[in-house]
Image (cartoon, rainbow, N blue to C red):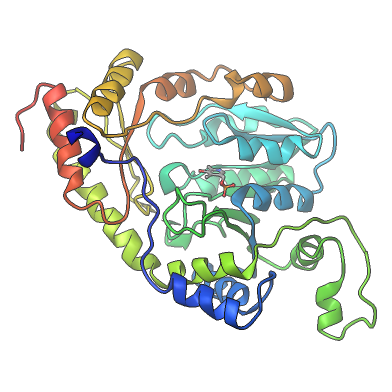
Amino acid sequence: MLQVQNAIPFNRAPVVGRELELIREALEARRLAGDGPHTRWCQDRLKEALGAHQVLLTTSCTTALELAGLLCGLAPGDEVIMPSFTFVSTANAVVLRGARPVFVDVRPDTLNIDETLIEAAVTPRTRAIFPVHYAAVCAEMDAINAIATRHGLAVVEDAAQAIGASYKGRPAGTLGDMGCFSFHETKNVVSGEGGALALRDATHADRARILWEKGTNRTAFLLGQVDKYTWVDVGSSFLPSEITAAVLRAQLESAREIIDDRLRSWGFYHAALEDAEGAGLLRRPIVPDHCVHNAHIYYVLCGDRAQRDGLIGKFRSHGITASFHYIPLHSAPAGQRFGRTQGELTVTDDIAGRLLRLPLWYGMGEKAGRVVEILRRELGLPSL
Ligand SMILES: *Cc1c(COP(=O)(O)O)cnc(C)c1O
């Protein structure tokens, strides 16, 4: 069972610091529901790091996006512009409000929504733009915000992958009106399941807290601003328990260490595949100078789908899990049912078929060397 012994998983959740200690603290304090001290610590820490007006922890990025969809006031018939090359949650947040995702093609370099194609997708029913920061490289937010301002649209960043990333020196997640983060175990900083909604300014702050409190004015009540705690709006249970927040707190304390470690593996892959790109055998990720990423994903674009799928199989035979990524939403059954496309999504269809993600996780260390060795051999390149 040599293969199993040497197996390299695609992802391995980081456990780095005080997770158990902080969970124990919550248990011993008998403080387990949401909105306790661990939750507040995480929210304060994120608020400060992001320069946000307010941050609310959520049970996932999916629910953060749903909360954002509610705050945007999306209603049946409304349209929201987004890339098709994304996870289903970006679109579901819109569809759950009865609104329609409008899929626009992505840029061939960053694989983010092509900002030059957005304006052609705007109709009188458009309410918002939901850009996604793929691999934590930010979409072209200055251009996107300018279009939003011109047409009176909200901007919700799907920053699920982008904790610690920045654009022109500004943190991802507070570049638009709202930003949604994920702490799912496959992301950089994790709490099992988990997420956060960041608000750039005060516009939606009061209503966000009410919706987060299941549609009640509990916060105003706790602050002594009202003498009764009652149902005032729609809402749901968006908040995670203190156990989840305890894990997140430990991870946020170690976030720099996690990201730096991942950046080392990312940098190793990038350097080790430079000649492969030079020889035209694959394309490496492109990170514009004004974007700082967090090494969430290391991907290569293969020559074609057959080569990509062949490499996945070859890696598997060595016990290494490498992976494709999104099936473009516009080509999925629910995407066709609920969404529409703007123009041909040529780049999306092309890159989705050729993209290969290599294993990347905190603490993988020298294992990246084995991944590269196999990839180089398959490409007919000498070992390093
Ligand atoms: C991971 C991810 C999500 C969903 O995050 P959850 O926390 O699992 O709900 C949404 N959008 C993108 C782009 C993601 O990568």
